[in-house]
Length: 181
Image (tube, rainbow, N blue to C red; front, side, top):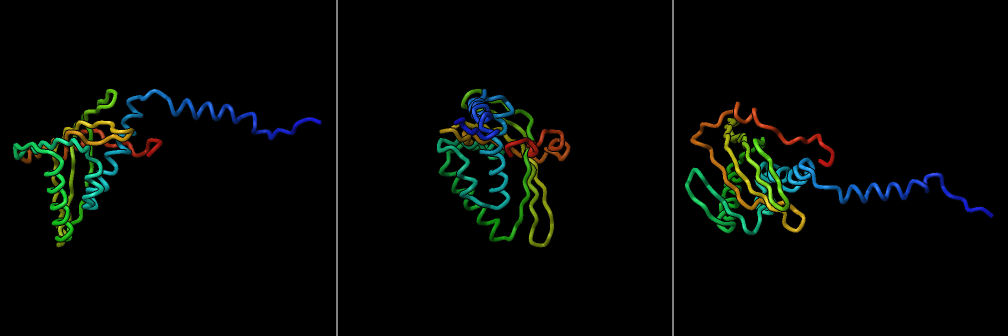
């Protein structure tokens, strides 16, 4: 008596092989950017906009170096965490709403490290409805820590208010339409 095989059973080894190849595929620049977007940028914008300090701080490496260029200061995670928690709490207490966006000038990754530069735009809506927009330039060094990208060095500057909407618009946005988003 012959064995009955479902018509799709012959495809299973091919599907398994394709999945295995995808899982071990070389990390192309686009794949790394996609991982960084997933691990850092999308949750960073979400947490920042919600004034979610713990969600925001979870994206930082325990070894974080914060460079507050406008204040000419450099410090670690403990102080940064204290500042973020206090600032986000003040914003919530004041009834502010924020919509932040990021655009990139450079995105470079090599092994477990990445360097990215670009602009932030932060639109804050005051309780009376007034909207204030602020632009800043960032430089981040990211490190892949146990398979997850984290912020290792965070430097930003408003550059004395000289960064414009045109600067921001000239840079490259996150491509949220890419598969895997």
